[in-house]
Length: 561
Image 1 (cartoon, rainbow, N blue to C red):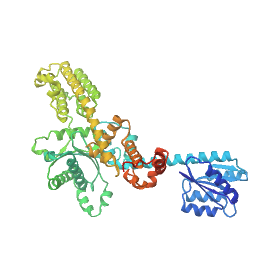
Image 2: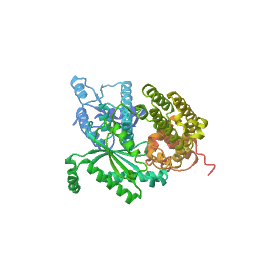
Image 3: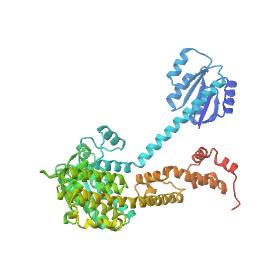
Image 4: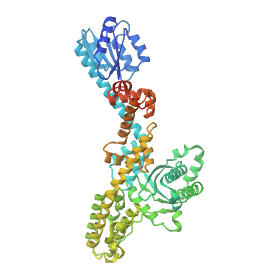
């Protein structure tokens, strides 16, 4: 709420205006003060927040124009209105230069003054709301910056394209020190079977510890950017520091200088082995590490990721899987090529895993279009498509704790005799029919799962109402990524989690005001507000009354006490 200060050396005028304005009950105007010269105004404004200044021009000592010039130099956001009995143009011109929002002539008409003050208070209130909104946006962005960074890198790796301007804008917003067109490498890390014994919560702690180890080993040599892919691999983008940045690391500069004389491959091999040793020592597990060749950032990251992740997949069951390998970009040669649509992101597994069943169907249609048009006579390409699609179906079924045969029944008879798919059409019919059955089953199950997640999240909020409830904490409680939880909640309920938390807090406040003798400050804390004035402000905006007015109006039911 705005505070108004009236300054006029004629005391009767200042007193009269203050009394009249106070009686108008102007929206968004909280209080009206008055003083009789500029010096008193400056002294008052040093100790009291004033948002609107209504001042006469002609006053002994410092005049009104000098006063608003002083306010403009020392205060921010004060709305100035000049009031004068003189209509000379020079005063109006100076008022405009000083950004006064209104210039009124004495004797001022009360209706005109009232409209000016209403408009000014409304404008101030709107600017404050915008400022608060911007502050909340910045605060939210900072709170969720790691998650947003991870999501952006995930999109890049899976082939989502942006313009150069979009990349540069996004990198600047996310405070990522990567230059468009610069050199970068990918490092993929897979946590091996020793970590499979952990539940989701403990595994999350292990992953956080792994991230700290990798950062500690690499951060003095490379800019780092991290995400986690659909395979559960930890993916790091590495961009070497410039030499002058290395030298800024103080006592590490000698080591950096030693490393600078080695090839990047040698450096990464040694650093990768250091990471493995730290994981074995501190986390009692093992990791496989694979690093790509140099790639242009960000244009070549997606293709380099595809090559590197495919190479890491091939190390399963090999003695080298826990070692460190340099992955090149081997696209093969000759006329025979793979089915590009089959492996082009987003993958069939990725689409089904995220519940995009219509997208999975469209993906299959594109696969079979390419297969029919280019490789309709190739049994090997038919087998390539079959095994990839079958693997995707098995993954989705097993990930959800079911056997594929249970879900699809007799339609799977052919899967045990892949050579019986003698045509693209036969494989297409089986693939589409199986997908339809999976869709019918998991669409219902997914709805039930989402409802359970929402109930669990709401229960957590209600049980922790008196403490700071962040989206991150709620997401950890239901074992979901914060952005996934936020999306599911809004889709299923039609409101954001923030809106639900606010509604629960206000409902709780109403109940406590009606049914207890608790002090307002105690009720504020119980509802999650550490600042009593802020709680009163929020409650008044919600109900139209202060907490005490609400208690007096509704009545306090204490019959149960």
